[in-house]
Image (cartoon, rainbow, N blue to C red; front, side, top):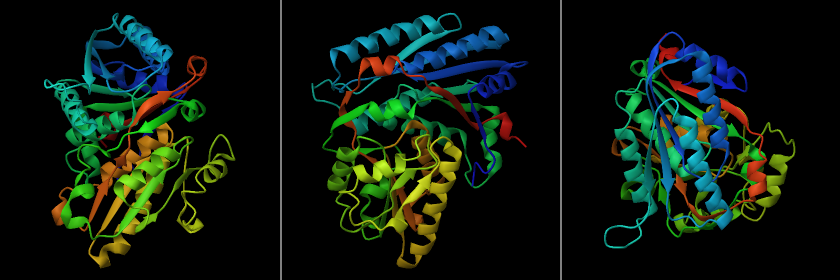
Length: 385
């Protein structure tokens, strides 16, 4: 287990971690954030800038990389909020560094809409090209769609962690890679994802276990992480992948949770989709600690991989439909579990997802959110020993 020992901080502990990382050393910071409607990203960036100025961090170079998106349908209010957010992020960061923007999606030169998988692959490559020469990489997922931050997280980890069999590789040559999350599970449950696409979106590096002909006869184990208002996406993925009939479904529910009845409420929401799923298949994952949820999911995947190896191999699919912290846990487990070469391994790992084309949210709910700041330090000097 790569992150058997981990660095995870919440609330005021985040500022202590930043001091330990930046005070007394010169650094070059690449801060990656989303150009979206979620105002939580503003709060996080402002707190980081204030920490830089108050702590007197010696930052030689700082770049804010804003990732924008095309192809989503948003109300006029949410579009206006996106524009307001973008300008606010420019204003917040200009005192410590420069701002760059890249846009995912849109249309090709021929006027055809770029497929989501292609746009994701191209955008991930663009971001990875910006990484060299920075000592600190910060990925703020507060205003990024889950397929985008999953792609960026796994892509950055792949470039930094060269040997997943050795925990020492997490030192990553001293490059500190941290993920910032403004977590508000209640707000996440209120943001509705509607009109899921008619194609499965493939996270770069996780497409082989979906499409390779050599694995189609392997047993399939599907781990859907359940979240509120996601039944449409669940059904769309099941139909597009044709997995409801022959798959072993192991739904993942948030527990413990701030709302003690959240897991029960989700079972009620998904009662139609999980009608044939035995209760023994249900997994419980920690809502507020992504590393604990990562351990629980990784352990389940390893047990299935070992037990099904007698049949020649298996496919392990994880679909994150839950809150941001649990989605990050899914990404960490899939990154570690993914085999180096599919054709020489007795299993494959995939992250099938039906990206919604439309997001619906009450602007008042977005603005009134009181998120809890968390940070996951995934690589760097903290892991040198």
